[in-house]
Length: 240
Image (tube, rainbow, N blue to C red; front, side, top):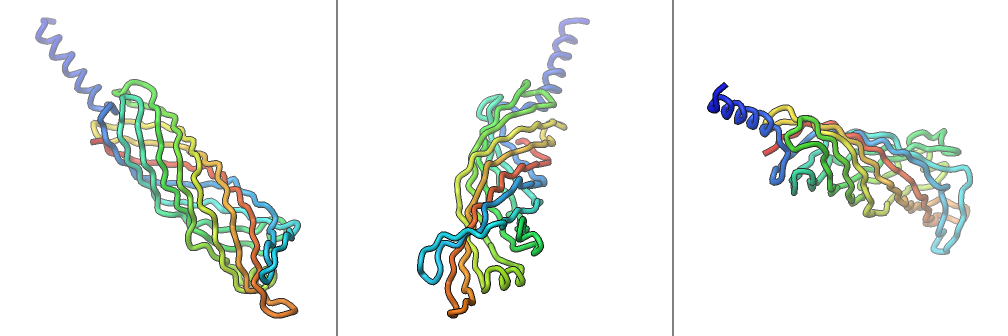
């Protein structure tokens, strides 16, 4: 082999490996499917105000959990260095069903709510930028809030809450812990899988116009719900 052939071979190899590089200065976007699996539990429902008078009455053997949910998601990221990337994550708000537990279990689905959780992640990628397989670890922060919270079970609303009820929930900033990998398909396209964990809880506050022996009174009640979801994301991405 002469020098010219050797140089040609080296250049070709460089093109082949570099074609898959996720390196400093690269932008990328992905889309895919989120599966949110809450590891949920709740405190007993507690009345805090009746007819304008503060109370502190817990209803024993009561609780609720959240079903799993699925939604479509999107991310956009930038490689600051060959190994460090910043990524923004957002999804179409999934709708969760609130299921009764303990003494509320016979009522089944009690209500629904949609969750918003835009997230900022900082990821560290292992292996060389030109490697086809690149695992990573990430940490970040998510802003969590809920919309369209409502009681949908009329029987529960009348028999337990004793009247029409509106629901509100707290919003919060929560940490996110993330791990996954990308597989580079060609110069631009790649596939990915990741898992994230959010140590998340929220307080659901209920306001009921309750029918009582002395007439209709406004009853305020609340419960703290732990969601602690494990979020899986299967995606396809494009690198610029």
